[in-house]
Structures are given as structure tokens and as C-alpha cells.
Amino acid sequence: MDTAYDGSAFKYLGIRMPCCHQPSSLEELIYVKPCGFATFVIEIWNPQEMPSVVELHEMGKCFGNVHFFRMISARI
Image 1 (cartoon, rainbow, N blue to C red):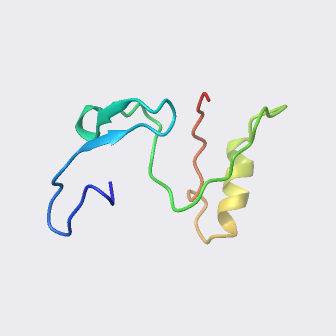
Image 2: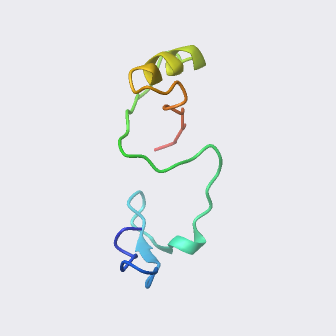
């Protein structure tokens, strides 16, 4: 999105998807909740257990907001 934005508007929305390298457009993307844009990512590959809501809240306390972290599941 940063590349498509010229400072005042989105000019060109065509992209090449990083996952499959196929052409697409930002306006064609379908966002399935929960989803989001992040400043950073913590990836857990093949977890034995998913982190609980309590664990996510405890991690969020380190950043001053118990709702700071969200669990977004993805298939790669």
C-alpha cells in the first residue's frame, strides 16, 4: 500500500502477491476477519498449543495495553 500511495491518493493498485507471485489488485483483496496490518509480527510455526487470551493479555501488558496483541491464523 505504501508503494501505491503517492502522498495524496492511491494511484496504481496493481500488485504481485508475495505468497504466490500472481498479479492482483489491492481493491480485489478479500480480508477475512480477524485480520490486520501490523508494525511487527511474532510468528509461531507449528505450535503445540495456541496462546490463550490470558497469555495474549499478559504479553500486551508489556506494551501498556492488554488488547495490543491479536491472534491471526494463517496458512502458508
